[in-house]
Length: 270
Image 1: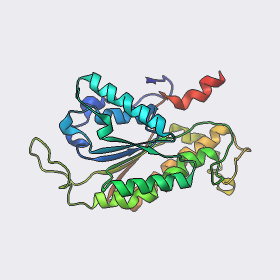
Image 2 (image 1 turned 90 degrees about the vertical axis):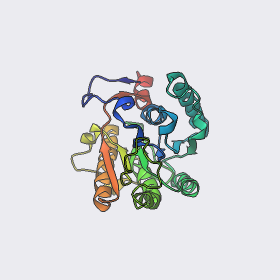
Image 3 (image 1 turned 60 degrees about the horizontal axis):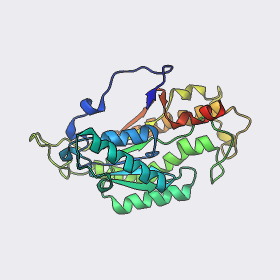
């Protein structure tokens, strides 16, 4: 996965050395769009750890269970070949979860699965997204980019919020494995990480076009439709943080311009 020169910048960060081994030990993580791109790479970094520092479970979300399993197999091979954990078996930690963000029914089913099978959720990474696509609508009739990038994630967060708050209210993290070096456990650090974009600047000058969101919004340029979905990501994150300042750490971030499958429509058209 390569970085694209324009729109790149920020600070140097190496997850292999800059994340403390105890930071994700025993935690439960859910990543949307986990079968490719930044989602897949993030999951790889989460599990490319010594056996004693691994998360307890990662939900790898994908529209296709077949693609999810293929990603899990790739991650398992990558960790084994890295030498960090030669005996690593990804299937023992990473669970595939079918999730189509264009369908409220699919989102509800995925959330029910997580709530049924997980007793905690420490990190919710809202990564999946589409960019500058052709006109279209979701199963419920909302503009496809706004529906996928914002509405689907907002509904998923709402449905998983009780589990996030339950985790945040757990007794100072005492239900997590204790750090190997004997340092006291810190309070739960429950996070919602929202992958937004500098593309939020492309929102129409009048702002998000709420009046016709339940349409394909063909009167708006595709980049403007993308921009308003990314602005919604940021506004949603700000409000979520404001409502739960003591329970959740909420971050909306621009990850940089990274050469992932998000750019495939432009390669295909060129």
